[in-house]
Each structure stands twice: as structure tokens, then as C-alpha cells.
Length: 339
Image 1: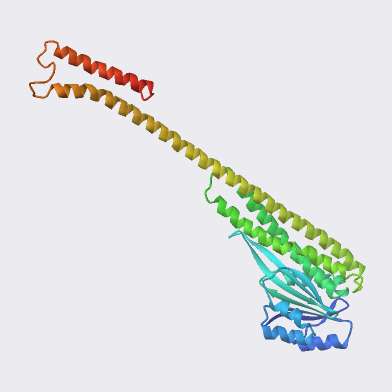
Image 2: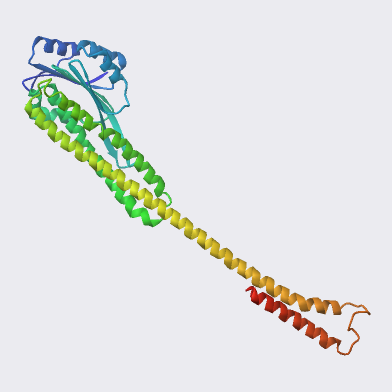
């Protein structure tokens, strides 16, 4: 287990960074003014169970923490609040969104953060809190709110990256790029995953609001949660807008592809009709030229009893026959528009 830090606060200030979790638990037990924040990176099952035993975390909460790869949620297990968040990071080189899962246990005297992945940047959260300890003074939920706010801040560049990708797709729509449909599909999948990370934030925030009176949440924290709610709403609307624009782009791309196919089919049909017309012309002229060739071939045979062979008008009659048959066939083909 990687313990990123194990710090004890009193009145918003760091009073000690114990070497073991047992020492932190002991300090918190001895003095109600102490608040422990333990940050872990990808602990093993037995290590997480050890933490749960020390801080009396409900078994069902630990079962939830062991089940990674699920959507953001908020659950209360007695006096312990369990929050799952999905942090996101946009990777420019692959145009993909990388998600990391974060589990946060908050009790009256402790905050335990368990990170699976590289985000969010909890070091930044800690540095800001210790620079201005007002939220630490307000207790464990103050730290939780700061963490949620950091996750939302990290969503902003992801949304911008997705919007830039969509702008590029819109510019390529009329360029006839055959690979554009796949890019739209891949980006749609990224946005859907991003929606799964952002949409549950509304229910998480509503769940925190529901505990205002029961857990006597400080007015300052209530005010901060309103800001978080507004920020989350903007992000959710921005992501929804991205998906809608991308769906419209997919419709346009599909329409353009269909139109292109229709144009190609029309062109092939016209070419086929043109070729058919040429075949008709060739066939017509071949038939017309075949008629005099047939007559000449018959009278060129070396037989004695061919009609008109010995008639003094035979040659003229044969020529007339050739011309007559040819003209008749020409008239027939012309009427049928073969010529």
C-alpha cells in the first residue's frame, strides 16, 4: 500500500504527520479537535480492511470501495459518508479521455482518500487547503467539498479538448473524408463515458444537501456547495451540448454519405444508359450493312440456278434489293431510336 500522506490537523493547521496509521487513529481518539487525512494510492484488499478496522468503517462501505469501475455515487453508512468520484484527463496525443476513480471516506474525525489512477491532483487540493485552512477548520466535509471542486476543475480542460475535436470534425464534414464516421463514433463513445462521470454529480450534491439539517452542516459549507452545484451544472450542460452537436454532425455525415452514394449510382446508371445507346447504334449499323453483304454473298456463290443470275437486269435488281433492304432497316432502327 502506498500511503501518499498521513497528516493530522488541529484548527486547520498540520500538527503532526505520524509514521503509522495507528498513531493517527490514536491522536484522533484522544482529542476531539484533531482531524486525520490519510491519502492512499491503490491499496490491496487486506490493507484496506486494516484501515477500515482502525477507523470503524462499515463493512458495506468497504465492499463498495473494493468494487472499482462503477459510476460516481454518494452513500451514508452510519456516521461515515462514502463518495465515489470519476476524475478525467484529456490526452491530446490520442484524443482520448482517461478516467481515474477516487473513493473518499469522511467521518467526524477523519478523511480517507483512495485513488485508482493518476487523477485528481490531491496534492494541489492539500496545498490550497493548508494555504487557506478555513475549509479544514469546518471539518471533514470541508475537505470533501474541496476534492469535488478539484475534480470539477479538472473536467474543464477535458470539455475544451472534446469541443476542439468536434470543431475539427465540423471542418472535415464536407471534405469527403472516409474515416470521419469512425472518428465521430469514437468521439461519441468518449463523450458518453464523460457523461457517465458528470451526470451523477447532481445526485451527489443533492445527497449532501439532504444532510444539511441532520448533520448540522455549517452555513459556510452550504454556501460553498451552492458554488459547486453551479459549476457541476455548467459542466454537465457543456458535455450534453457536445454530445448533441456530435449527433448532428453524425446525421450530416450520414446524409452526405448517402447523397454521395446516390450521385455515384446515378453516374453509373447514366454511363450504363450511354453504353447501351452505343451498343444499339453499333448493332443497328451492323444489321444495315449485313443486308447488302448477304445479297452480295448469295449472288457471289458459284451456282447455276440462282434466280436472276442470267437476267440482263439481274445486277440492277440486286443493287436495288441491297439499297432497299438497307433503307428499310435504317428506317426501322431510326423509328426505334437506335440510330
